[in-house]
Length: 153
Figure 1 (cartoon, rainbow, N blue to C red):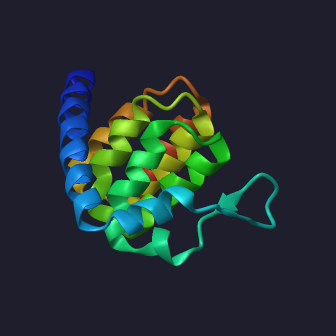
Figure 2 (tube, one colour):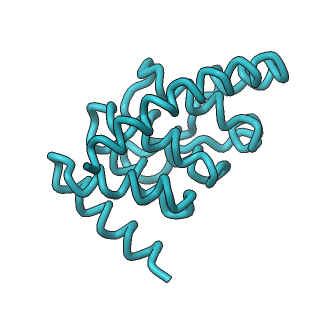
Figure 3 (cartoon, one colour):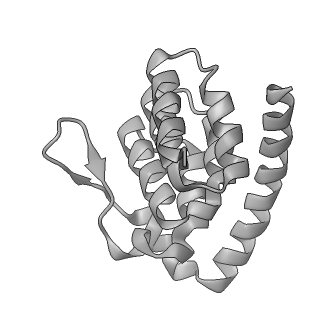
């Protein structure tokens, strides 16, 4: 049942994202180009990068972050940073996180997507956590448990 719901969500969100992206590119192509050109900064933690630029912090950048994440053109550490940034600037955008959670091959990225669901809309967070709790990778399942506890009232 959960797999069916996630599949339905993913199908709907891909179409929604495409429509939202078309509108976003028409509204602010400069922001879209800036997000796609943004380079994350290295942190003190080995292998961890973060986006710190103003373009990726803009809430209007959410569709462009989701598009870049969905493209799969970036290495895993950059996709992880994209997932974190998307979760921070657009808590209502949980559908994009769940959509990508179902398809990203890297468990580090999937774990970041799950953690980004902490403040997401409950419908999307529940769907994402259900999906993550059945993930093949134990670190993703552990992140789902932690995120579920953080979301508890």
